[in-house]
Length: 462
Image (cartoon, rainbow, N blue to C red; front, side, top):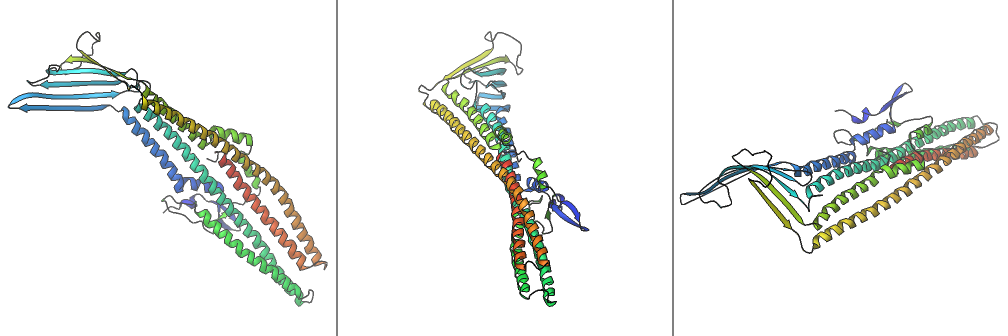
């Protein structure tokens, strides 16, 4: 069985061994392709496309056939066969063509004996002329499809934001564990060095206790950071799936990408506040979904307005003798025709007025929701932008602090070699330097988490 996860892993070669490396772009590709939520979002779009096809059914031509016969006391009252083809059109006009074959001895006086045919048309002159249920259903189905596409974008936007937060939490835990491991190795080597120095009489025996205490501290810290790394790896595995809808656990061998200049990645993102707000206003999936919903309600309002109009339908049939309709041009009311006018109108229009008023109120309600959502997005984008700007400054300061702490450790080690310092001071400096390095790693991870959250808040992550 094909392993979809390995297909997206980039391989880097180090120390004569191949180490699988998971890059953020590859991780997002896996999430987008195989995660159940991403697939569910796609199903929503497919369902809306099926609804469009369902609405188009209202404009399908209809072929019908009506047959009836009556025989009583040996007498053939009537025997009728009447096939008909009706074709609905976009503007509420309905075209018809049919044939009749009527035989019998007991027919109504308004019926025509023998074989006849007709071509007819029905035209609404008031209600249903501008809008009817069939047109409204199709227009709303198309708008629902557009809404489904925006909802798909919104779902993927939120999914990617959550997934990348998990990814950078994993990156942080892996790198912090490496920092602690480096200090643990140094502390282990120092214990051996101090023991040898004590045996040679160069150092007091109490230094052994000091060195072992530091080693024990780092060892306990390593275990705690190892648990954090494993838990973050498991949390990241929640977003990794294979093509056969089975979850995939991230292997402990997989490592995050090591980039010399992480801030070079920032060039791939739009971090300008005004630009992000413009993109959000123009193309945020949540705002677009509201706009399409309002357009759908406007279609409903047009349909409900038809309830305020009287029903006035005119039907005209051009009749022909025989089963072949006569399509020659002639005056409409000269000969061989049938027409009818149907008029109906509620005297108080209570239901029509109520339906139309409700349709307008729904539009007002959703317009207010759209304005509120727009404001929420503006505040969210601005808040994340402020966080990003503050984090960049914090990281710059923290990088300088890490260098300073490392310089202090080196200086303390030199003084220790010259007999001017103690293991206590070295251990204290090392602990501070390690904590500063951990803090820098956490700030960098939080920066990238916030950048992805910023992109998601503006609706440009997908």
